[in-house]
Length: 206
Image (cartoon, rainbow, N blue to C red):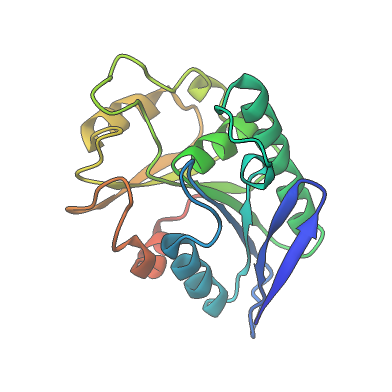
């Protein structure tokens, strides 16, 4: 069953499982999308069928009438939105909370987790944008050494925002447990990953 969900800075869709397992998953979107993206919907449906309470939600920038760049101030507000979403869901389940996101949403989720190590039990990072396409020197890993939350990176083998090899090298900076689940022949949009809920759950790190 799904129903609209809204609180301060958080707007999305809540997927309530028929047979709850006590755990929850949060999913948010990339810079060019919203919580209705096919990838998030497919994963939300799959995890909900497996017993997870799932919230797929829009980051604050997507709710804003302003279409300005995602500068430092906008990113800080988006990280606050991630924390508000985690807090809201933590009050709904007795078990573990997995915080996840696609591309920019995963980056904001992971950055928020590095600032608040006890916020989430685990991270699910879909197509983490390691660097802009064709700009491998502009790494988005400055906070990796501060990340204490176990994280599973689900990544396409053809992602221009970072190769599998680049990703494996970068996550060595993270002191928490990490894993990489490669999606063969997938690009940054991660087509096909929406059908990989079972494989993702098998690899999830806590």
